[in-house]
Amino acid sequence: MSNLVTDIEIAQQAKMKPIREIAAGIGLAENEIECYGPFKAKLSNEAIHRLHIRSNGKLILVTSINPTPAGEGKSTVTIGLGDAMKQLGKKTIIALREPSLGPVMGLKGGACGGGLAQVVPMEDINLHFTGDLHAITSANNALASFIDNHIHQGNELGIDPRKIIWKRAIDLNDRVLRDIVIGLGGEKNGVPREDHFEITAASEMMAIFCLAKDFRDLKERIARTVVAFTVHNEPVTVQDLGVEGALTLLLKDAFKPNLVQTLEHTPAIIHGGPFANIAHGCNSLIATKTALKLADYVITEAGFGADLGAEKFLDIKCRIGELKPSAVVIVATIRALKMHGGVALKDLHKENPEALIQGFANLKKHVETMEQFGLPYIVALNRFTGDYNSEIATFDKLCCEQNIPYALTEVWEKGGRGGIELADKLLSLLLENNNNQTFTPLYEVTDSIELKLTTIATKVYGADGIKLSAKAKRQVQAIEDAGWANVPVCIAKTQYSLSDDRTKIGRPDNFMISIRELKPSVGAGFIIAYAGDMLTMPGLPKRPAAMEMNLDDSGKVTGLF
Image (cartoon, rainbow, N blue to C red; front, side, top):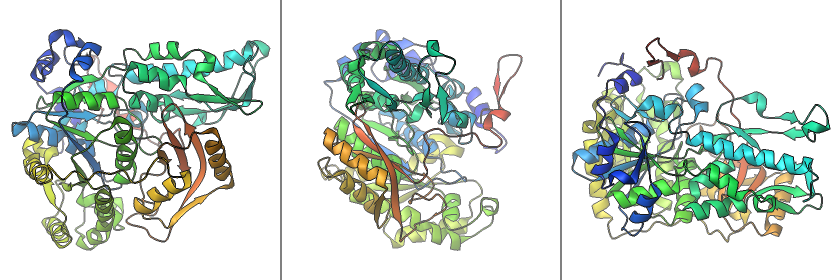
């Protein structure tokens, strides 16, 4: 495949099947889907209810090394692996997160894969799709407006405006909204106070949406969400405001999982989209569980590297959803490993096996982490067209020496055909471990907050321990006093390093993880710990990806990757 052909050009040339045909292929009746045009649909509540008594297929998690600007292609491998499994005659569904407009218009790009391993229609999925993220944003901001209106209308609950912890949200990168002042212009406009926006993918509403098991659970999670504290420091919940029903109503249609297809017509369920660096980084629980009822194999991914998305998938999502993954695929590239070995982006085209050897330590750490969870794994070496044979030979030698199973993967260039080796080895791995399931989360929810944080820092990041700020120590005590401590923890930190310092690439040592503050996400069911300087509202780069995007006179999208 020529490098001159863009992802969107490949996607626009695709011959998609009607979504009703894709649905029928996985056993869904015509009245069990709700079509959004010819190529997108939502699964009906009736279908989800009918399927819940079925046994589950096997769940395979795709994760990666710490990402670099060179790109790892985790979504591409996930999609290509699903296509390869289908080529081998396996009933397979791919389960992915929905893209956020922030990265799409900003720096990272979309989440539809690339080359010949894509989900389509990629323009729709990367832009507004079926409106799910807009619905989540609306529910989030409706709650914010209900809080301020309650204060304006007499403040019966005694909310302290200085102690409102619920933030407004928008599905875009906009740094000027991080810290703002609202309510100016006189008493008719409310009470002036500081406020903050976060990107929708980092919001608690998104986390609640993605961890709810059904409509009842969704409403109960929203109801118990803590949004503020009173002047006497008592928590105020959504239930206290009496709006949990209205907020659930706003999510009624969005909560139904979305069905699309790959370029090779493999079914893909794409639903929910929390970030993995500042949230839990997994697609919706209801989408994953529904996929497991419809297929023998479900290939899903979790955001960024195994230190973030995979850890949160295994310690948070699997615990809440009672999921038992069967295996893990760890994606790596020669280019990214060379960057972890100290090579600058501009020099990646040069042959450098020595840097690859140095950067291999990053992959080795993620392998060790999966072993600690008790999960069988295989590494997918996602081949780029510019990789040198000598570097691939070096990678092969390193894996052989350290007994790390891997498969050379070429799905970007060859589609599912380029993932057959990976699929074959994965199936053998599953067969070998069929009766040897030893998956165990890394900690107990009854462990102290500090112990849970220390466990992740030492076992997953390779840190020497954690350092709690004075503020974080006070918050730990307050969370414990309120009875909110016996839940998983979700560490928000940079994706680029195993540490909380993005400049420490490879496999750093002799470092501590600095926890500056904590936030109880009572509705979502976990505690967020902010490490380093992580922000919940990203900014745009100097030249956003949006500058390359356009719509021609015929309505055709251009420049979207």
